Image 1 (cartoon, rainbow, N blue to C red):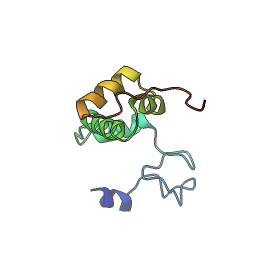
Image 2 (tube, rainbow, N blue to C red):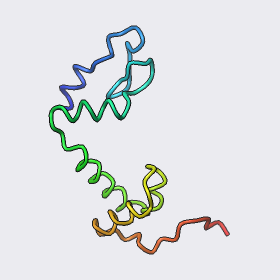
Image 3 (cartoon, helix red, strand yellow):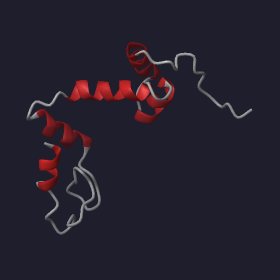
Image 4 (tube, one colour):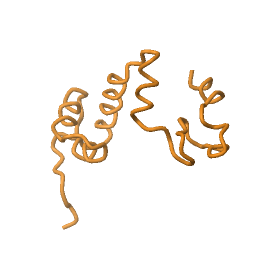
Length: 101
């Protein structure tokens, strides 16, 4: 499905995006599609966007502390901490903050 999308990407045959490097090019030159527009396009063929997002965050919190992932993605610390606990993360005792002393 992804390979088929690469061959038929919209917005690549315009004067502003003839050599777009984005997987989902936007209408503005050099810019990707907005997250809202992408969500609408994925929702039409009934892609489970919420479950995919949650699974991706669970994968991230297994690789990095939940507070770091929360700040990186703009989520609340409690949300990523709960997902980390559900995923069996081992960063539970991580103390965020400045450790350079």
